[in-house]
Amino acid sequence: MTTTPSLQVTGLSKTFNRGTANENRVLKNLRFTAKEGDFITVIGGNGAGKSTLLNALSGSLTADTGRIILNGKDVTTQSEEKRARWVSRVFQDPLMGTAPRMTVAENLSLAMHRGEKRLFKRTLHDESRQHFHTLLKQTGLGLETRLDEEVGQLSGGQRQVIAMLMATLKRPELLLLDEHTAALDPKAADMVMKLTQKKVNEERLTTLMITHNMKHAIEYGNRLVMMQAGEIIVDMQGEEKNQLTVERLMQLFQSRTGGEELSDRMMLV
Ligand SMILES: Nc1ncnc2c1ncn2[C@@H]1O[C@H](COP(=O)(O)OP(=O)(O)O)[C@@H](O)[C@H]1O
Ligand SMILES: [Mg+2]
Image 1 (cartoon, rainbow, N blue to C red):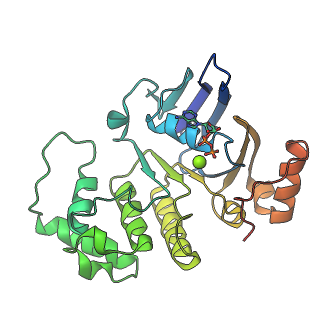
Image 2: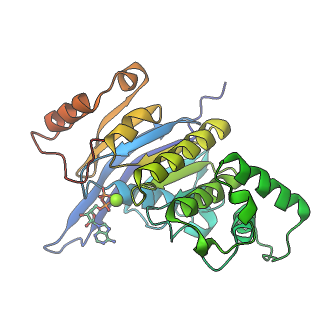
C-alpha cells in the first residue's frame, strides 16, 4: 500500500486587496492532505473561502504562499491549462461546463482529449461513439439517443450530467465540484449526485465537493471539512462522520464559530 497522499496542501494563504481598507484574508495558512479516493464534502458560510480554495487548487487563482502537491508533483506554479490534465472541475452554472453549440458527442470528445496538444477533429471514430453511447446509457436518462444534438438543447440537469461525464471521462487526479447541484431542482440535483457518487467510487477519485446542502454534506463522501474565515475549523471522517446529523452539524458550527448563525444559504434539507 502506498502511503503518499494524493493531495498535499501546505501553508496556503490568499489575501485580496492587500494594504487597502478592504484587505481580506481569505485563506489563512491552510494545511491538509487527502488520500486517493477521499471524497471530501466542504461546507461553510458565505465568504468562508471555499471557492477560493478550489480556485487555488485548479490554478485559476495564484495563492500568495503555500504549496500544492498532487501525487508527488508540485503543481503550485503550474498554469490552469496545464493543470487541467490532472484537475477537473464542475461549476454551479450548467452553462460553464459544456459548449452549447457543439453536440453531446463533440463535447465528450473534447473532454476525452483534455490536456492533449493535438487538434480537435469533428469526425469521431466509431469506437468513441460507442464508448459515449455506453456511458450515456448508464445514466438512464435516454441521452444516448441525443449524441448528435447540440448541448444547448438540453435541460440544466442534463447539461450537468454531461459536464460531470466530461470531468471524469479521462480520469482526473483531483475532482473539484463547486456547488455543482445548487442551480438544479431537487430531482435533477439528486440525479447528478447519484452520478457523482458512482463516478467517484468507480474511479476512486480524490474529490472536494463544496455544497450548501447539509444533508448532501452528511450523506455523501467519507470526510467532511467545515471552513470559516479562511480556516478549516472541522475535519472529520470515519465513524464520526457516519454518526453525523444535521442537528449535530449545526451545533458544531455554532460552537466552533462562537455562536455564529449558519448563513441562509446553508440548506437543511
Ligand atoms: N477575485 C476576488 N477579488 C476580491 N475578493 C474576492 C475575490 N474572490 C473572492 N473574494 C472574496 O473572498 C471571500 C471568500 O470568497 P469565496 O472563496 O468565494 O467564499 P465562499 O465560496 O466560501 O462563499 C469573500 O469575501 C469574497 O468576496
Ligand atoms: Mg463559493
